Image 1: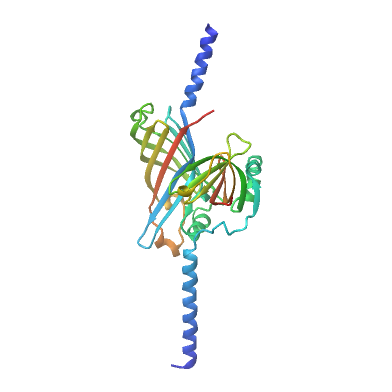
Image 2 (image 1 turned 90 degrees about the vertical axis):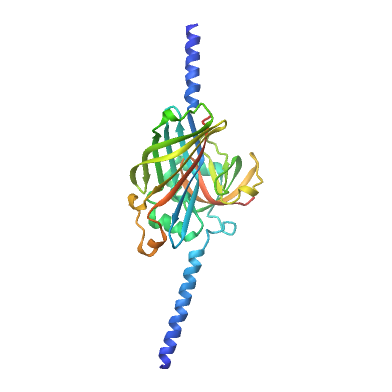
Length: 139
Length: 183
């Protein structure tokens, strides 16, 4: 075999292995750990809910898909399926609040109603409440 | 006297109509796709739902972006290519329990319930009829259902590269714990 063919084959092989490696890496990538992520917005629960209530379209454009760090007071805590924990934050509205879903946290939650909390999560949007997903408790 | 009895009647109606409606904001909807290549599951614990026990009417609303996957890439594909959640952020169901006479909401127990209604996913509305169970408990009402849907029916296009990874029929699980609406 000519030398240049050997080199070419070796180069192709290296690229193929790298490609497969990168592919496997991206395929297995888990949702980002928001503990390490920098929040796009730091806001209070009251302000965040108000922004969506005032103008949902505007607030969606600004906050949806972004990482938001919210501080507020715990209104209620509930345990969902798949060991998920839902923490609802108090707002000025009777009907609408901030719901933060923390995956896999139900068994080791040590929270109580009325206490202050800081939660970081990805904003999914607004149903009756502002919904945050993949949340982590900061404080 | 007449006035008082009218007032009492009004008051009782108010309370009755109040006790007829149940809701949750933390309901669960999950789905599961099985193929020889891989199993994919997603769950959503942010389902909003209302149940009116006097008429058997049920309404559900979810944000597509609230579905949580094991792997980041699945979540991206699901939102960006399959469900196009920026364009169609919500999915809804509006329907009713068709065998309402078979469910006694005043007595604790487990009942078979068939629910029929309009399911909207990806801006396509289809009529579905699904079997489920309703359990009346002292603290509220739980509703469970398991049924299959085909992404193709909702105009969800799966690109050729991942076609082998995603089932033609997706199993949907619904688990709702309703509590009475308080005023």
